[in-house]
Amino acid sequence: MSTSTARFVRRIPEGEDRERLTCNDCGYVAYENPKIVVGSVVAVEGRVLLCRRAIEPRRGFWTIPAGYMELGETVEEGALREAREEACAELQLDGVLAVYSIARIGQVQILFRASLASPGFAAGPESLEVRLFDWDEIPWDELAFPSVHWVLQAWREAGDAPLGAPRGNPPADLRGTTPLPLRTSEAAA
Amino acid sequence: MSTSTARFVRRIPEGEDRERLTCNDCGYVAYENPKIVVGSVVAVEGRVLLCRRAIEPRRGFWTIPAGYMELGETVEEGALREAREEACAELQLDGVLAVYSIARIGQVQILFRASLASPGFAAGPESLEVRLFDWDEIPWDELAFPSVHWVLQAWREAGDAPLGAPRGNPPADLRGTTPLPLRTSEAAA
Image 1: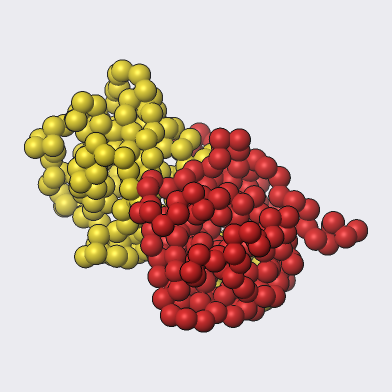
Image 2 (image 1 turned 180 degrees about the horizontal axis):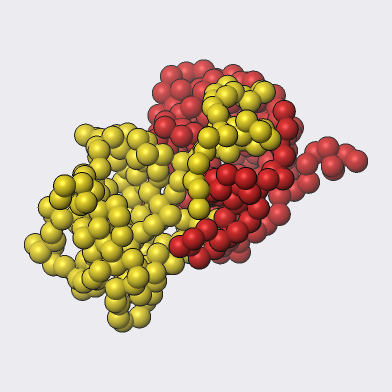
């Protein structure tokens, strides 16, 4: 299947103030909006559930169960779906732990604090492995994305207390501009 | 300018599990993602700032300064921009007060509690009027959207205390399915 965008050009539609991706043939405006990632820090008796990614980017690295929110679902439904897909886990959501903006790639991450609603988890098709980590075991050098670092720290700082206002980006990276680490395939090259 | 989408059909791209809007000519997949609305409940000495909409939908009705987040900005930057555009106001954001899902229209609203960073406000081009309301003066029957009701109640309940975890949809409307009120033009017809 072709993914050509050759017929799309950037121009300012009538009545707007910025360029939009517009089909040169039919005038269809493909609005490019920030995309929402929903996910959860899942804890079981103080240990954190992480998934080792079976897909690029960052195949082989560890992340929380999270992914793109789909049209027609709520943020909560999206976070529950991602945990089912990636970790075969049924979650109980506690509340929004963090809202991060990764402006460089047009992404907003809405991340919950959660526990297991029923025992058991396993690697779904997008995961190589799913397991629980004690805090001191977390493979910090093998985490998939900067925001996984951020949200694990936020989870640790929140402790068992009721959640406060969600954390935002850390002061050192307010706009989410830390480049992603290399893909493993590139790192190996 | 044409907004025809005649060349776009819904089909399941290779390797995916659901239909996507796909150009029949070039195969371009126009992913339809939930869109993010960012906005703020702005209070000045206990009074709430509301804007009377100069645009459809719901022209003439009152809302908080809020609008679609743009690509390349953070949620905080988006909320500040909307307050500038709609109310000529410079805000100080306090934290995320509410995260609502309006699944029916594929919208997620990230709404802050805020104050004025500098005195003064005025109607921007998308507002007919901007003013402060005492709680008892709020024109409940003339609010633009159900979520404006929700977030004003959430703001009231939060009081002056530090923010807790953001409110989600009210239990009576967990998926955001309350239909929008009629457009004023329809209501007048």
